[in-house]
Image (cartoon, rainbow, N blue to C red; front, side):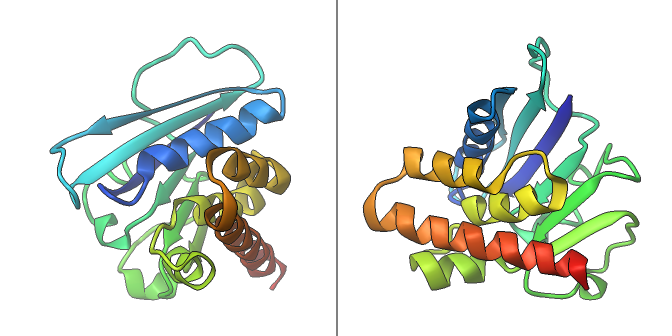
Length: 183
């Protein structure tokens, strides 16, 4: 089972991001579940979403305590103690930021990828919604879902110009992630 924890703030679409990821995995014939947890229900409050992907039925419905991957939609959350808790040394950390890793003040080893998802969303969508964009990078970074499955999930959820903008941003982030590992 591959477990993902997604951290963001209310209004960033953390729940939608987890749902899109589960739909992408499900479309590939895998089992998936997505669910959120909320603290304070106000715009800007920290929100955590969870997603599990497996080739077998998933029976656990507990929050993800030991994630294989952590996606951080708002880099200002990185220094909160629970954000990286339980992430294995060989886990994946995907951060929405245009800043280089060295400027984030993190002491992490292993697989870390920084992607300017908000900027890509603004460029392609005209709105600062990084969730779907990060899933494009996630697909390239982890290989847990394919790019076309993410694109199909986005097109299933959104329509028209919103879908088109998200898809362009997803593809852009996927290519950025691929190039980050080719260098």
